Image (tube, rainbow, N blue to C red; front, side):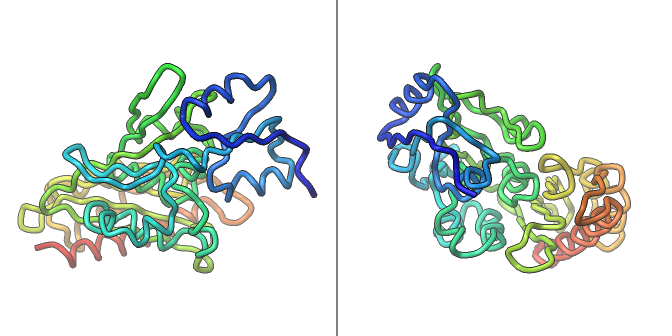
Length: 288
């Protein structure tokens, strides 16, 4: 199947992109890496009147570190996240997750901003942003605004982006001393969509005790899902087998995956519990 005919415009700045979207009399879409949008066009799941190519906008590029944390431009490609030394040092969870994203051909073209704006619930990076407490920098006609990851992912393929707005960058807070991160997922084959995935960020400064922890799952709900009851079961305790079992037991109160064509909700919850045990055991092995 071929895409429906559409107009195409390449822009050089955020202002030009926003103006082009506002001037479009029909439906417009922004094109970045195109790894999700182009297949949707070919299948006619999406049929805009105008594609606005934002791939040359310099303001959407770059990885930089500062007092407010690590800033990753929306056009940062998955492959850059995988190999960038700043990401490895300041946000290793993202580098770890990037290795699980699809295959090299997709990682070389796909962009962080496009991934997050799509908000696929099985995707790795939305869960990472939730675990890291990241903030989204959004550009619109009225200027820039910041949205916390907790408020950005609203529902299945639905985000806080208003029509015409562009996700310009992601801000990841500086890591605290003693903070540990881990990402892992279960899939039928490497590169397939995850059956369950987990991004974890833990503060283990107090002799291996969990001072704070954030657990964010992917592929178990309509959005990336925090697990507050499992987090509470771990907080203030040594990260030992007893605490891990308590967190696994509490997970049933946090997650309620729906049945779908590929897997029952009960099996997906079981996989999430298995994954939680693996990730927490790995974090415990890193604790001082």
